[in-house]
Image (cartoon, rainbow over all chains, first blue to last red; front, side):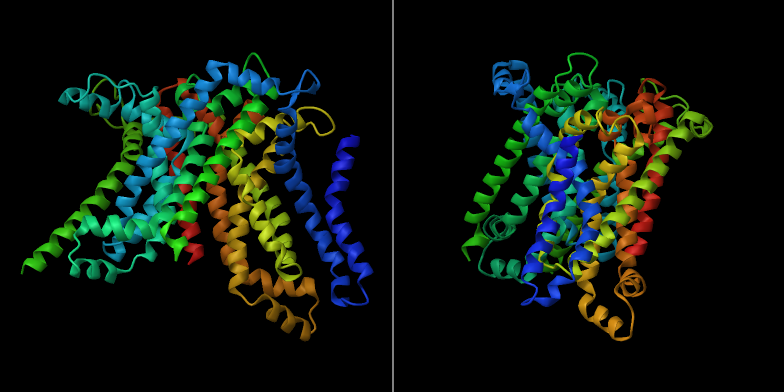
Amino acid sequence: MSELISTASSIKKPSNGATVSTVQEAPRVKPHYKHWRPALLLLPFCVVFFFFQLAPMIWVFVNSFIYDESWSVEHYHEIFESDFLLQSFGNSMSIAMWSSVVGLAIATIGVASLRRVDCKIRDWVVAFTNMASNFSGVPLAFAFVIILGFNGAITLLLKQWGWIDDFNLYSKTGLTFIYIYFQIPLAMLLLYPAFDALRDDWEEAAALLGANKWRYWLHIALPVLSPALLGTLIILIANAMGAYASAYALTTGNYNLVTIRIASLVSGDLFLEPNLAAALSVLLMIILGFVTAINQWLLKRSYHAKR
Amino acid sequence: MQNVNLKMSATTYHKTVVYGLVSLLAIPVIATLVYSLAQRWGATITPDGFTFDWYLQLWQDPRFLAAFGRSLLLCFISLAVSCALIIPTIFVVFYYFPRLDSWMNLLILLPFAVPPVVSSVGLLQLYADGPIPIVGTPWVLIGTYFTIALPFMYRALANSLQGINLRDLMDAAHLLGASTPRAFVSIVLPNIRKGLLASLFLSFSFLLGEFVFANILVGTRFETLQVYLYNMRQTSGHFTSALVMSYFFFTLFLTWLATRFSR
């Protein structure tokens, strides 16, 4: 209880602090003095945001370093010693990488063409993409079982044509397909506005100077788009690394992904180890931070930054 | 002549790509729709016959209706709470402390950056027992759903507020004798109504599809639509397909409302 009170008072501090300082400066900056009452209106928002967003994060960070009620890096040690847990990171990263790169490539080709079709079709497709981006998680997993499961319509069709011998949706390849599916609409929605940066006359100018389509895309369009492409790639990777619902619904938690490990350590049937889950969570966040940092570094070196 | 041909082939190419992509994205939805209407669709490529039985069965299942009702109620309350918390905050930020806006933009990134699974680790431990034992009750979901809706609502409202000249409008209202709360209710609110409604419908469809928090923090103790869908995975695939399609059409309707209001 005392901990709660102290946290509550620590939230109040910023606004209180602000009023104190404005009271002192009152003679000089008079208008600021009357702002302490509106500042109170920020309080409920701050309290709820703290309890449901910041406090859980702080708990995770602090408790990842607590082993048997004392400070220790034992949990991190355990993770790096465990092949099983390291495998979960490997699986998550490889699925996230593949699905993001493939999804982004398909979305880029799609958006490039989308900008060149009639306005009516374009609006309709954007609305459709919006809709498709809502089709994710558990419903998506069920839909994929229907089309690509052992007796799925497309699996049977491809088998009949002799293209495949068998297809296991509940494997890494299967999961990557599902992930690609939910990455494409997201990537398209994020990329669509970025294509405003490309001007039609550039393509004509390049053609006049003797460049073919490929050279135009390689030397002009893609470099100009690179900040948007990299930014989108990061969001896709983060989205895939943190995804949980589709993989869980598809494999009932039997496929080894970081998010599935974390969830099973806090809400599984046996072996509850919340502090180990916290350590896994911190490592997951570090990886996401690292990816973002690389992205920022690449952005600085990209075409737009140089200008 | 050659130029015209070239242009024609380019148009055909772009159309092919766009239609190809749309069909690719539509396959799972269409397959689910067909499956939900099929009498039997076993180890064959095409279904045997069509029927509405699965939908009738679904819409007569009291457990489904209860879960749907709970989800709707939960989303309504969460969004009402979000409005009550976010609207005053964003007004105060924009009118009194414009510099806080950049900080707020950083804060609202957090619900995006932290995966729900990570948040739920902390939430489970903090609120399972102790002074606020709310794990297993809808209350914890209302709090977390507020954080999910926050980025959407804040961005939409910030865009609306940037679109109107807030300071001049408020000054004019004050000159005409309105108090600040009065001016807020009768001048600012009507101006941000459109953006607010659009973001509410979008958040609603988003929250209706939320599974991670609902499953980990509450589960069957307050079964929402998505948790019910997951728990029905062992039953007939046709039944779950009817469930998925019902859910899909409902969110479609919400998105349609959102685009109507944002115009």
